[in-house]
Image 1: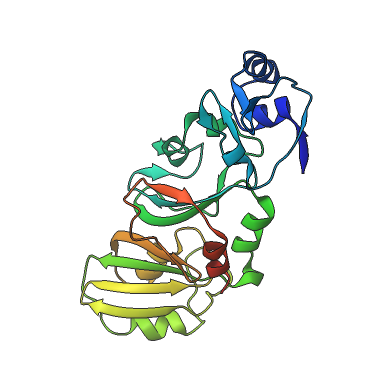
Image 2: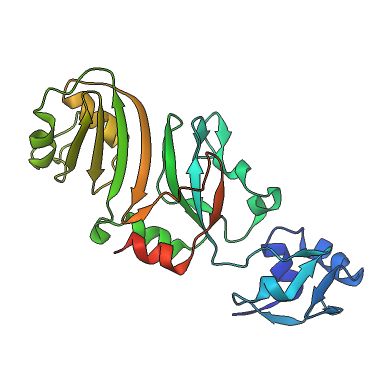
Length: 240
């Protein structure tokens, strides 16, 4: 896609169109080794652009579509309307002004850590969360009381109905690791689903961590609060 240079910079959060024009006029925008002097120049926004353009001496931020893998820390919230530290604060400040905006793919509550995908690609977001895609989510749950042994069959039955829901849950897979530690894979994304499932089985989740989305595992080198740009291989793993 080709876009005017000043609009490109504004869409990436570098400022208003007028502020972007001022950056260009001051020689702060360099493309292919030479200052870009015309704000009206139309730029091809492809994957190579960040390697070819600098703004104030720094590589241009990745253009849209941008998809990130985040290890969400405890206490982080995924909605602008919730109290607490917003996960978008973990990214560069100007990224909060990007158009299209970055959004989490689904949500993890403040007391849940682990892998979450963040993207400005609305079609990708919809595809991942759509029930038609059958993208699994895998969690590691620490429980308040020892598991009784009936939970795996209950969760796999396809008959478990949560309080307030009219429709039973899709079958889920439970692997018991220790008396109070289990790995649960679900295939839908209802509100607080994992916590509500264990509550329905007479237990309480005291710690919850998401390990994988589809076959995309949380990268082992991502510390809590760290993120990286998703690769094509990462996104393929989501739908594998």
